[in-house]
Length: 455
Ligand SMILES: C[S@@+](CC[C@H](N)C(=O)[O-])C[C@H]1O[C@@H](n2cnc3c(N)ncnc32)[C@H](O)[C@@H]1O
Image 1 (spheres, rainbow, N blue to C red):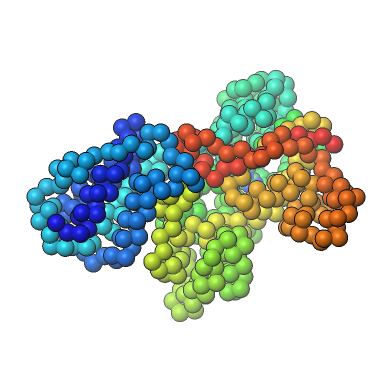
Image 2: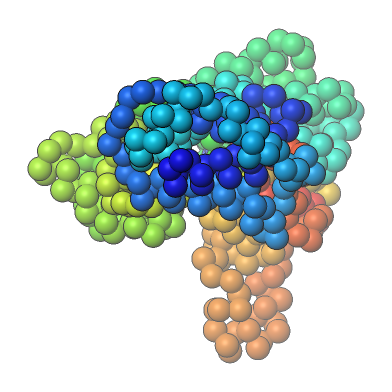
């Protein structure tokens, strides 16, 4: 038997089988894919170093190495098959194939697992699954005859839940025309209760004015920032690292003819600007190298135009790197670069800041605000608004303690800074339960904050 084979059977033996997960059981996927890969008689030239790295990550997962950092649920920790049982999975042909020491099988296996994972996820989350639904409803506490705004309608999961929880009224906002169409359908389902609006947070004052809705008239506001699954899963929108398509990334989908696309950003920004975008909005450690490669490609080959081309360029800057997400699942090296471009193209952080300012003006006294953020850039802005650490209506880029030692010692200045209209309902952010993350892996980074307007 080959070394690889021995390593491999040990890994399978450790990997838990969990019948409750159906096709989503990684243990089963790996077993099936191993069998499939071993049964193939094709020999290919694979990158063995990458194979070993992947093997090590899977092995760590199987060993529950990350147990202190990322909790696994009860059903994931049992030991599965014995080594003998694993041997039975493999046919004689497979063993003969392995004896030829074809080291490529492992990478093939990795890619099969990865592809299978991606496609499973896509099928499962084609429609956007609303995140932290119960927590949102608990904090907003919808009440009959009150008026709420869902600032990020998406597929309407949160909106629908609010409408069924009480006989309340709801204004829905989304900048994406696809979401707006869905909101109109919801409005038909709940006659005289839903007002669908198409626009950005920054367009809300005009939209509300047209409908005679005044400041201090709303009982609750919800923000569920980021992209919807409808945007991410549609390759043509250009948001997805795993689906090929032109790099568009405009949430408004051409509503504003002047809005720049991701493709145009990559074709026109200079190297330093690209570096800043990737570094600041993506917190990407290889930002400089990636920016340089994009410029080189632009001059020597062609503009980067599709999601696949961008993924390939990023991959070429990260040789031998195999990134994992928070759940220790394989993650594309380009995820952060995609996030950065999306934030830039849609001016997301300024919009978010503006949305927080608007909430202060449009909520009634004792009105409730609930926000769900998906990365620290978003959450920091929300946190600073709630804490009152804002300067000229903009979230302060630095925490108060770093401002100046003199300022920090001056209690009056601190009090002035912290004069906030908000009272936080939850002292610390709330995160989704293990069960929710398992059911909907896209919820894994969600951070919920809730506050009441007290002034
Ligand atoms: C995470 S999804 C919301 C999903 C929704 N809560 C649901 O249950 O289906 C975020 C949505 O917010 C929208 N969005 C993001 N930024 C926006 C902005 N500045 N103005 C209006 N809509 C925005 C996006 O188009 C997207 O549809």
